[in-house]
Amino acid sequence: MFTRTKESFKYQVCHTDKFDEGVLEGEIQASLCEGRDYTVYVDFDDCLERGNTYYYRFVYKGIFSKVGCCQSLRKHDVNVNKFRLAILTFRVL
Image (cartoon, rainbow, N blue to C red):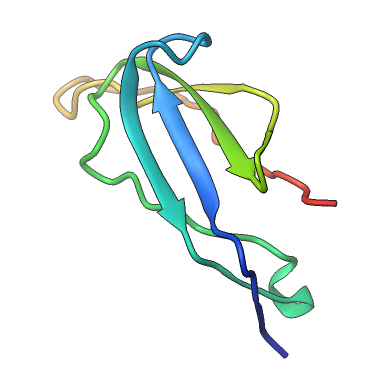
């Protein structure tokens, strides 16, 4: 069974961990349920520049998550021998 949240999740993506240079900001109205492990999905395809470091956080009911850090893949014409993939989680209590 799906339940709708009354409040939306907000996300912020910036170049610094101080969030003084905004890159992306938006809201997600998510359907949360136990069958989907209470997860939401945000697609940043073609929204971030390649080869840059970004900091991100989520906001729910005015509460900020811990700040995370990630790096986008390099330019598509550069060979990549290996890369790490992360799955990001944010638990709402």
